[in-house]
Length: 367
Image (cartoon, rainbow, N blue to C red; front, top):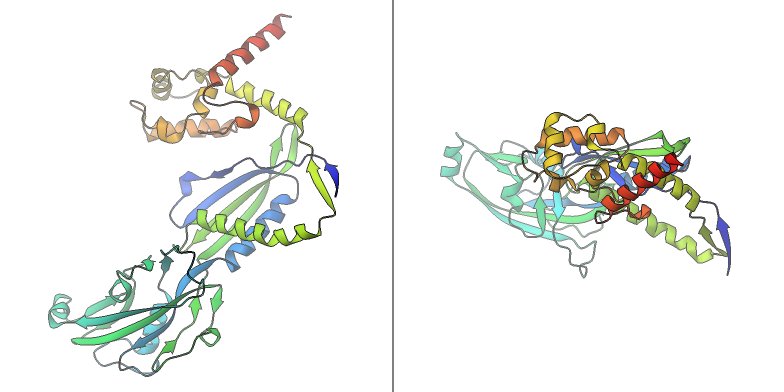
């Protein structure tokens, strides 16, 4: 098999996560630089995969003892069966079992003997609200994301068996498309498996060296809690790579890419100019400056190789100082905990590299 050499592609080195707006169900990711056009190519592909192809558990059917169909009222329960089914559709489950031997489409049946007593009803001023936790709590198979989600309200003492079938799937599957044999008095329900509620992506211009027409990709991901935004992005990337692998079977040539060493050297010089700046040159508050001085951090380079978690352990260093420093670094295109290995820079050698760089610059000026 022959090989071809292609020119250098600008590739992102890391993904920046916007911590200021991050939550358990929302995150904003910034990825740069891409060659022009690749921001849309990658962003749109990831968006489509996240919205349509991620898997999560959902309730497939329900059977309540003494209830033969969904179009009926139940004695002692305020809601009719139609409303109960609608409430069950809002149940959010997260898979706990990671056993690789289990078939991904195996359906689990969770049975609960619901025993509502007079005491429970009296405690609730004449009614007892049955939640998802009452029906599925402690099952060991699934984590309940919204365990207090209301299913129905009981006004009379009762003991009923409730069976729920739960399975994994993708997207939205109407009840008639569920592929399992329906049991007696079992009510099959529509299932929303997709754990991702919203994906927005934006492409902006970003700078590489002197060029400003490269792509910065911004991804905003919102989930319902069954997966985290980081998991959603990770799973989507793996699904995309999995589908591209088939095209490697038709390889006629092997492509290898120019590493752009000249550009790397230029980039190294550019970033060293920033790293060699003294702390007092970036106009921090007196408190932040003193904290860094007490920690023996004299230059920006020594600062950016420090992880955020370690910064917070410095004496008299609080979140306000951390926010201020992160903002100043962001203005320079830098961040805490940066990986500078591509430039041969790490935490162990940062001081000596900056010292040598400064001496070289002084020497070139004197010449």
